Image (cartoon, rainbow, N blue to C red):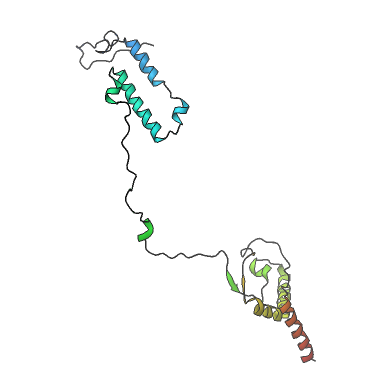
Length: 212
């Protein structure tokens, strides 16, 4: 592949041949100069030179040696400009002589509000969780099932009240699925406690004597 010499903006002016006339002061031929320039472009440093992490002293010595090498290539004495024992000036540490002041010292006071991941509510003495919370519908049997749940809760109401006195009149949604979630139809335990069972037994016994 041959390269054409660049066209001159002036048609009557002859463009000099760079191969025949190398630049002044350069004794190399055009082919030698092009070969040397190409060798510089394809040069790749060693991995240990690229990925090394030298300390400040070693890095300063490498910079000085690089500058001396450039002086040698220019034909000058490298130690005339960079004599033996030359070193970088000592750098003053950043913030020397200044007392540390926290950036947040002048910030105005702020209030953080933590939102819990659950809801605390009063104890639900009458709740049919399958139908009222999760949306179960048993068709024509649903009124009968809801009535059975209601009378069961009425029967165990003393137990629920006494349990609230002993353990608190509150409950949470911890461990419960969200309303409307597709959950199976569970049969939940009545939630009997020792205190509630004692009160429940006393109420039933007293009602048996009070009602002939």
